[in-house]
Image 1 (cartoon, helix red, strand yellow):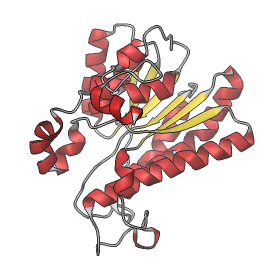
Image 2: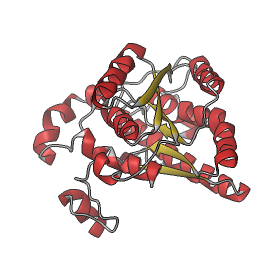
Image 3: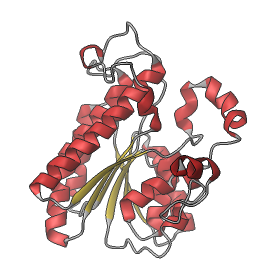
Length: 276
């Protein structure tokens, strides 16, 4: 009950922060100049605010994004505010396995450390469609592609931990929507079936997969004795471009919830997992 009260009212919880806290507030005093972070979808919404605040704290931010032009505009905006920011943009199309592999190769070729991996990009409430390789598009984009990206970069993060002694962080942006997936959870035998498809439950299914991925990867890394934490994060209800497929939520969300928090507030949960 305390957690729900804090979520609704913004009243601070045990950490001293609440749902109305901003990313800047929760990172006050943190020096990230020795850290490198990858964030997918870091050019808009929560991802952009997370990129900005990480850069503000000295972290070298690598934005992986499909729309490179938009990401470069976001980079320019960050650099205008923070002259010392270290921000680079690499193309990453989560709809393409080839692009994901190329992104991982391109990042590794930079010979940078990898301290933080933020699986932030996603899509929501899409009409039924299949990805390029024949997988239901929400499950493919939100879960499978980030699963692959994490696997491709995991050795790099492990090596960074060994070299620097700094704990690695992997964060999957999940959602409380995982509680509203299909009746039997993930439809493993019908992932790609149009019959019975529901855009909201398919989204919840992909978010449940994010959580299960984080939990299992965390368990395996602990067994290996690897100093890498893996977390899944519910950011709260924030009006971002993700809502573009839901006209009802775009129209009624503000009235129903008296206005979702802006990204400056919603992004603080991701930041807490990454820097504290």
